[in-house]
Image (cartoon, rainbow, N blue to C red):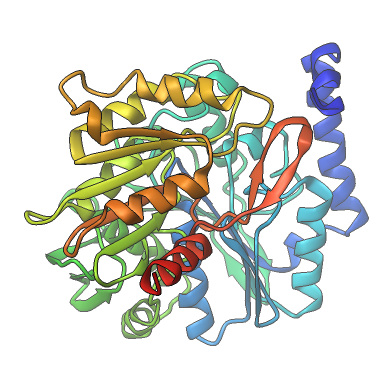
Length: 436
């Protein structure tokens, strides 16, 4: 067991909370509260956060506004991008404040931050002056860590509690404290209950009783993407799925608060060809291979619903994200896979100090009893599992590899981390099979 985990067992939770709280403010003080000098946009929710961050970044950047951003995908700063290899979506307090300081030194006007419940629990959001907060959606996640779904929701709510109604002057502009809420989600009313200068909703449905809502109309879905109208402007996305339309609406709402014209936003979103590890098409022929980060039941179901076709098989590879956490969802993920896929291959993901076979078998327990057992396979070696699904696939089939997305590391026992890339492994194996 790692020293860090041992210390957590012997140190009281109260002391740990105080430790995280003090570090957060200390980091802000050392770097001289850089967030007070820029417009800070926070994005939280269960799924879609990284995609919304990327979309907001592209919208602001296309509008000529110097912007930095950080998410589980990676970091944007000074015209450069690098992948997030930290194995944590929201960096630690000092690293986060340093990134904000570097953004300010690079003369950024905006910083877009993906905010996680773990980050909020550890007070990483403290000392950051948010101007705009976006709520995407809420579904069960990190339940064991938070001690229940209601606690998980309330942890997200702590971020919105800090969005006071005091307007501030930044970049010579008087700014309203604004929250942007997904009205399609059942938790919308909870987040709307917090005070703010402005409250803006968005949704895939019509909300005639809520003025100012950004709504999607005339939705057209295809295998390659989607299109829709919002406020009379036609938007086209290269990212498939209704959920990506919802993500786009959140980003559009942010752009609208900054007075960016809808035609500029439409052009910016159309230029996004794909997002690393988010329904990323890595092989198009002779069959389709997608890599996606989905590791929650709701996200996994949406991925399968989006990619299913009336013709061809769907061959799915999955594990269960993060050994030692969220054990409840393992059989649930297995059940969903057996409902949508014609082949299910279970494999290793990020076991940390837990027995990887135990994780795989717990996912397997959820497989529907009527699912053909000759089409249910298990591999400890994820590379072998990927090669197997690629060998099974025939022209017209769809292979879906979920759990790691664009992550570049796999976390094993005793703190060991090995380089990893689902995408590169798929491409390497396909090249080998092509020359076989």
